[in-house]
Length: 380
Image 1 (cartoon, rainbow, N blue to C red):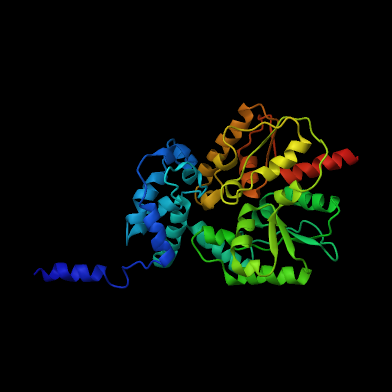
Image 2: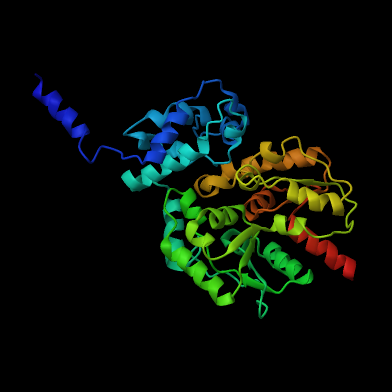
């Protein structure tokens, strides 16, 4: 017997080289193995399309489904691939086998964090540290968006991206809620912890403790947010569900009566995490159907929406690639002749704002922000 070969074999089976899987992860691996290698997902992947004209290598969702799920135990050799995915779910939406490719990306990111943390992108590590130490993903002092009302009946959770990157939009959304007669508490300095989960980490306990403590101090039972990642995190994290109810703001606005407010040609971008993960597509259209008779749909809409490029932490890893994807989506709206592009996600909004050129004859807003502007102008 070749004793050297036996030694090498045993070394590969040591505890340092075995990747443990939970029962749920093992179940998912069986699902991933049902890929029929048809390639339909490749046509839906905005990252793959964008990287065909860049030096960045990305094999696309099919490679993730048929290769990465089986590259055990050294799957972290493809760590750059899983961190280039936006986790938008467009591949899953068109997959004949309904393979949840974003789930395997999330799982592989967790395994990289557990087994080879040195391979995690610097931006993701910084985000995790910032949330723990500073309470938000930027590690910065966030500018307050306004005073909370006394005895509030609901809280508006602004989220890190909105307060830091789209401050005016957040301020106008909070003003809209007050204009509609609500007594609003504003939470504008905390992270829900959801972005950490996207990066492959566990949600820090200190993040959930901060949020719960704040909500308790305000005495509210309901939280509204414009951030789809925040609403996902609040709804899916048991410790949050024990203490309050969370709702995306489009759900709240859809139950209200609205007059016709705009005769401009408006189109709406469905955020991936809102439309595909939470199935919230009709609610914003219920509002738009009342206020805007000239609503036009982009070819990619609802659960088949096109990604803006901001998700999955891609903006922190490959900013130019992320903005390039947003530019393609923005041009889809421009080609329709739309004068206004609306969405309801601060990450989508920020990417579109960055992708917009001074020569573009289109404005970009969050739906709630736009509603405030229309009502404010009407009241003048």
